[in-house]
Length: 269
Image (tube, rainbow, N blue to C red; front, side, top):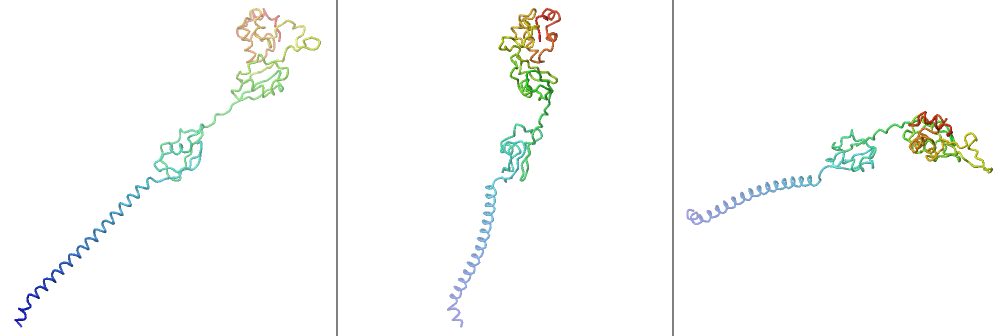
């Protein structure tokens, strides 16, 4: 027996050595597998986090839908970034209209989804009127309500326009009307008939200057009038209407009673 043990002792030692090596190799591989699994998990977690960060950064800022209404050129719904402002929304809608009032609008306010950007319009100026009396050679003489700022020509048109025998050559139709103004359109003073008579001038006024229809040149020949006063007479007629009496000529600036006394026998209305 002892001889058998001695004979195969070397063989048993070799088996024990091989078994120890196998045990050590299996343990090392198990630990290596665990390390690989842990490393893989860490890489996967890192990759997932990176992918999420990349995706988030790729998406960019969020968008929002806003309604732009009121005094803008193109009202409607627009899509903008949440980093945009009210001013950006108004610009996208074509800008503010001419009637817009931006004094109470916060142009720097940030937008949010579903927001309504309302641009108010400025209050319209109230319309005022004056009343004028249109007389003489117009189709429908009478008192008319005329919008403030209108001209004499507008009042004449309200009265139906000139008649066929109207003489508007010395009427300043561009004068702005004022309240209680009287506009008198003179008739043509001289219309010849077949017999050669002039029905517009009576024997009493023959040879006299009609201060309601005379031109600057005709008034200029009157004693003490001259060109400057003649032009003032024309301007007075345009602004206040025809003279009702010859004494009314003294209402013209520069024509005093002494001048009137000198020309009263040479003028008529």
